[in-house]
Every structure is written in C-alpha cells, then in structure tokens.
Image (cartoon, rainbow, N blue to C red; front, side, top):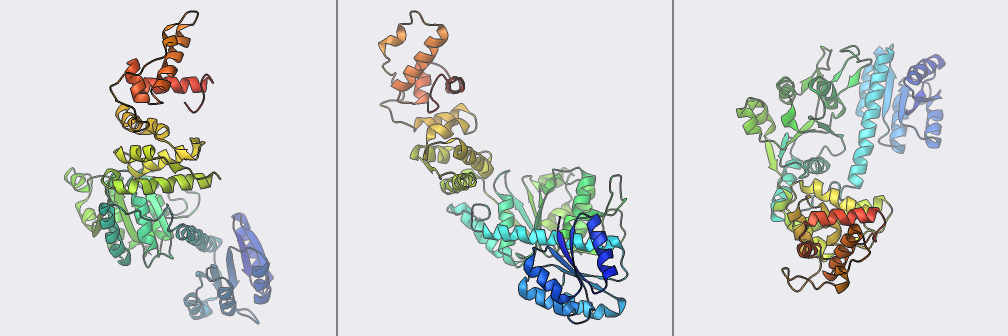
Length: 473
C-alpha cells in the first residue's frame, strides 16, 4: 500500500489520521511541522501528503509551495477548519489535490486518499505510456496510404475535445489509436483508462463505470470510485461499446449529454470532465435497426468517427510492425533481436491476417521466443499463419527455390530397401529423405509423398518431441 506523510502540529490529530489510514493498510509517516515534513520528503519515498492548513511557523499553504518546488506531481490533501475554506480554495488553486473540512469522518478522508492515490497511479502509468510513446505500444505505423489517412484524421481529432467513435475489425489497433489520441491531446497529463464493456455483466459494469456506495448491493462492503470519476480530467476508452445493454446505454447517454452521473446506491450527482472514446467492431447502425443499440446514443458518440483499416489493406505496414514486435519481445526476454528472413517477410506480407495486428503481434512474439537463430525464416512462421494448408503453402513455397513445383525429386535408392526395419522407421526415413531431397521444401515433400502438408508438419513435430530428429528440421 501507499506511504503517506501526515503533517499536523497536534499529536492527537496525527494519531487519529494515522489510525484511519493504517486500517486501510497504508504506511504512515507523522510530522509535527513543515520543516520536519520536508526533511522526511527528502529522505523517504512518499506517495501522498496530508497536511493541516493552519500550523505555527510554516503553514499548510507554504508547505504546499515548498513541496511543489521538490515534486510538482506530489498529491497533497489539506485538512482545514470551516473558517479557513477561502484559504483552502487558494491552496487548491496552488496545486493541492483536495481538502477535507474538520471535523471529518474517516470515510470522507479515505475517499479523498483513494482518489488522490488512484490519480497518482494513473499519472505514473501515463508517464510510462509517454516514455514508450514513440514505441511499438503507442506509435502509429503509417507507411500505407490507408493508415496515413487515419493518422491525418487523428491529428485533427486529438486537438478537439469532442467524443470519438473508433470502428474496425477486431485486432486492428483501436486501443492503440485511442492512446495515441490521448497522448497528443490537451488531456495528455490526465489519466487514460480503458473499460472492456464485453468483459462484465450489466450490474458489475455499471459499478465499474459509475462506482458504488457502501451497501449499495450484496458484496458492496465499501465505497468504490468508478472509471468516470477516476478518469476526471483525462480520457476514458469504452471498448466494445456495442455490447452495452439498453439500460446502461441510457445511463451513458445521460453522462455524455450532461457530464453528470450518480454512483450506484447514491442520490448525489457528480460532475465529470472526461473525454470518451468508444470503440467497436460491430456495425452500430445495423444494431440500431435491430433494436439493440440506441439511435440517440449512436449519434452522440459518432461526433468524430474514425474507421481503422484491416491489416490486409495496409500491407506496407506489416514488416515495420513485425520488426517492432520482434524487437519488443526479444528485449523483454533479454535476448538478441532476430531479423526476418526474406522468405518470412514474403510469407507475412502474403497472408491476409484475419486477426489483424493482434494476430501479427502474437506470431512475432512466438517467433521471438522459439527462434534460436539470428534470423526468423519462412519455415518458422509458416505453420502459424492461420492454421490452414493454404497459408502454409504460400509461406513454404517461397522458402527454398526448386527447379519446378510439379517436378518429383529423385529419391535415394536405399529408401525402397526396407529389409529388417519396422513400418514406422521406414515411414520416418522415407519422409526425412524426401524432405532432404526437396531441400527442406515441405510443400514439394508432401506432394512427392502424396500426403497433406499439415500431416507432414504434425509428423515432424511428433518426432522432434520424441527426440528422434533434430529441432531444426
């Protein structure tokens, strides 16, 4: 949990606040004045500061300014009496995260602490995203004209504040596009949160989005902040928006129109300043006609629509993406980065990628793990391309040139001399000899033996697993 610095000149206040925080599992560092608080900040890693506003010597406002000079992002919560509200507002303008008014209830303090810590965690995550920002995670690869048009749209959209609807097949990179928009927008210093609307049933999704009060439903043991509250000042991605049920669609429409919502089990409205980016692989207009999606919500979301093309329509980007994914996976495992052999490049570019960028990433990460050489060949990636014989044939056909694809190879004479050998041994030797004669070309080997390419691959894999043949076969 977090380490929290509690600053107050009254020991009873420090002890009371410390006890409340300790019950939530936080570590507490007490300080009796501003000077000792700054000393602790210089010596320890502190996640949050809670300070009284009115203290002798250095008061809370002066301490806030001193903290800002050391760490402009350190969240600070002020404790103030009713008569000091104006000064507390001044402190908020100076960069305080929140303030609580004495006497306060423990739940009120814990809520302020939770919000401040959640915001800090999101800020660190977004710093990581920006540090990676021009990396494979958030940079938009756009060598293909189709993607260049998309990036041109995103550049304009990022500067606006209206809601966005991203459409496209599954795996085309809608979340990457959403992060790109956020990272290039005026909200980039705020939080970026994503919710998969298909991952939770309606009641749980409502709580995830809007939060809930303690006792709002069975199992609601404590107050919980929702994503609309946590992403305040930032961006919220609602992925798979087409999976929302009609009741939640109605509540979402109200948030988009009025920018207010209530936690589940609460009556007080909460204002939110969130930019919503919705994403879907469904045809929402067809969903409207089928009565499964609200027409008014579609029009409210569809202010700035962007359609992301499938990977098969941006083949110029495939090798750039593949190199990037290979490098990222290899670095993550502390390995040398392998290169793509020309036949592997041709195999990847020739494939239609029904799973789009997500499928390409999966194959590249698998290749980075399993490849033990400095180069990934077409023979390595071929069996993974869609699991179909057509895809494998395309990949393997370019692996090693042969005189003629229809030409049967000349087999060694000993292949037909099977005296004293079992059928299984004869089969293995025949297949391996044919594979050798075909220069490692699996399609021609299968054609010569009149078996399927997949059958050949399964047999080779079985013999490798049993240690009967070398792993590089």
